[in-house]
Length: 367
Image (cartoon, rainbow, N blue to C red; front, side, top):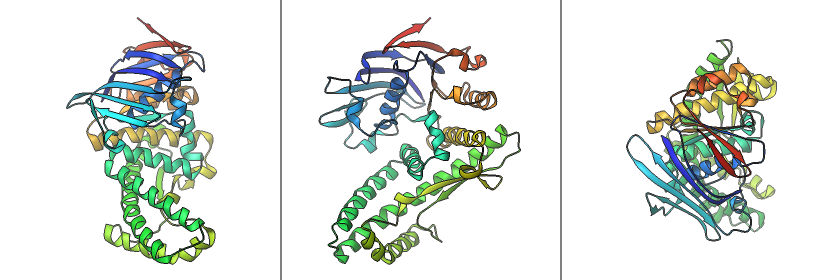
């Protein structure tokens, strides 16, 4: 999968910008706060119809403007298609091959990306909410059905929580909502389990390579709902029963206590909890292994590698981890790198690339 070009209008600090990209390595260099991360954010937005930095879409629109636009040309093994997404007072509008998508879930997946930024170290040492967001973003890229169930689940969850907070609980109404939650929760849990199993398969191998076969990494799905049977019908019945059993507690606390909105992920190295006992180096290696595993998972699911976005992350990795990252992606994955100094990048991979210098939202292409 290759992002051939991008056109940006009124996005963050970019008034108007059009760029063609190198099919292998694109390096954006410049001081901090000049627009390097904004450019990667635009690519990410083109891919997933949302920012990785903010949940407030209006922050993406340039100051004193009403709309922002991002357009791109994507080449896959089977086709070459234009993508476009805009955001303004009327919300988001997304188009694939010039045709508007009725739902964003139908748009997502045409440009697959994996982002690795310093804050992604929080996948390991951050809150469960961070890890759930990671699960949702990555599962959503590879499964439109997952996105649909997640969206429906969140709507029912919000409705149920609002109802519980009112303290005027009609148990029949709660029962109806619980049945809807159980249906969507079942599909979410099954897909998350499949995703984590595949991530672990690849991440454990990658981590063994990074640690010279000294460390065994395990990635563990920790569902809020404990279940004995992965059959969808049986699981849905278990969830429905558990929701019913916890009704009194939920009424007492005024919130939903059971469901995938409380899931988590665990990581162990040689059976020790990385989040609690791992060194900073082990936590970074775990995050790196998971990110590289994402590349392999998406390749398995869709038949080609996604685009990789490395946002100021190379300076965060020591020579061993950086070398492993760069060797893994060399000549396989179109990669976009932001950095303040070219010295942060292993020069061994810089024989086939395009270098861009960014200053105050202006880009100079080094010939």
